[in-house]
Image 1 (cartoon, rainbow, N blue to C red):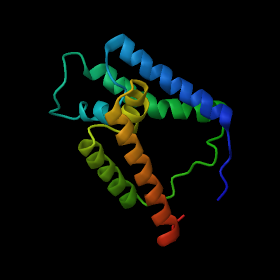
Image 2 (image 1 turned 30 degrees about the vertical axis):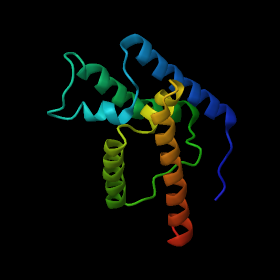
Image 3 (image 1 turned 90 degrees about the horizontal axis):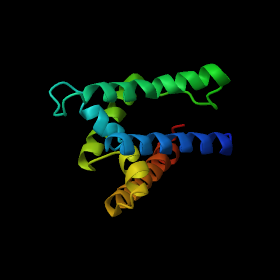
Length: 146
């Protein structure tokens, strides 16, 4: 499998993610950690008064931003979801469980925590990446998946 190397797209996307995370931190003192944002949107979650609106807007912006890029460029750089629904749901539940164990996700620890120099976030991100490497190796080379 060959992946297109698109450094300018990656640089632009990374800069936009960094700017959005910095803006949220500076404007409202909140960390742009997607798992934390999602967990406080769920029914019964503890959150501050008036806190629901920005969280819903943030979450809606994730797929809407991707849809806008697709509309403007007509290209998703070969991205396609090929896994079955049960596998996607199981994976999502495992990620949710893992982010609960790790007190955050790759956006909270990897983008926001590392940029603040948090040792805990640096360790957590190293664990995320090592786990991802092992998982990809096992799925592709041990189980023979794509």
